[in-house]
Amino acid sequence: MSAITFENLAEGDTIDGPKFEVSRESIRLFCDASLDYNPLHLDDDFMKGNFGKTNFGGIIMHGMNNFGLISRMITDWAYPAGAIHRRLETRWVKPVRPGDTIQPTGLIKSKLATAKSRWVLIDVMVRNQGGEKVATGEAMVEFPR
Amino acid sequence: MGQADAFETDFWKDANLRKLWDDIVPGEPRKTIPYTLTQQAIALYCKSVGEDHPVYFDEAYARTTRYGGLIAPPSIHILLMFSCTPADDWMRSPGTVNAGQSWSYNIPARPNDVITLSARALDKFIKRERLFVVHDNVFFNQHGDVICSGRGWTIRPM
Image 1 (cartoon, rainbow over the protein chains, first blue to last red):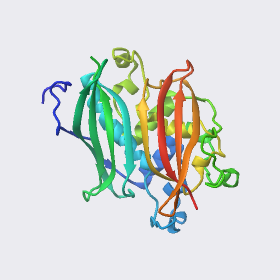
Image 2 (spheres, each protein chain N blue to C red):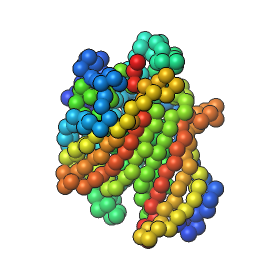
Image 3 (spheres, chains in turn yellow, orange):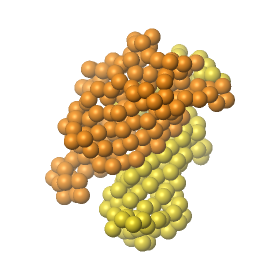
Image 4 (cartoon, rainbow over the protein chains, first blue to last red):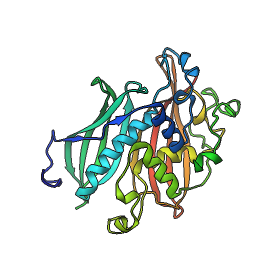
């Protein structure tokens, strides 16, 4: 594949992010790395309870772990092109649990040149091993002139 | 584990000191604390999400890039949100569910930056019998430059 440039990017081009195996250990490591020790991610007994109308049934991965994986996909794609990761917006659609394998992907949605720079909008999502969407969102990458 | 040793990891311990949804006043600043971002903390964060780009680890390589030296990944604000807030911050309330976030990136954080946070609840509302709070946040480096700014939606414990 040729090097990515603003000019040769087209709507519908895709980006494959890294597969990530979720385990109790990976969740615990994310607790230590993020300092987010919410018992949602650590305490199975706590997670037997209800959260309003929701019952998760066991510990879940941090939503921001999805965010970190998407961001990694975007920067690893942008750096070789001399581009800059400028924005990421995400929503969590479905909980991710130990034993799941998740993978972020991106889909080039549009390009826009402004007075001083050039921008690419990317639809992003994370799916689990069953192909279910667990997170969706949008990223914006700058291709400086 | 370094940073975790100096951090209260039991989020139940100060639970009674934290604001409930009812107490949170949109617009009111949250208490924040400056935080020195170490290379060790960056490396641990990178490990947790598999970040392996040399711009985060290889000083000689990083000097050849547009950044002129080592940087942290953009998503380091995930760590900064907890490292720049005190133990009684309501973001730590057990059962806080993150519904989504959006972040804009200006300049990268770097090892040894002394980072400060300006943060507040921006809005609170009830939707489908769930209690939501919107929070907005801006991280600055020691020069007063904006590193990144972001907004998040959390569902509060009932």
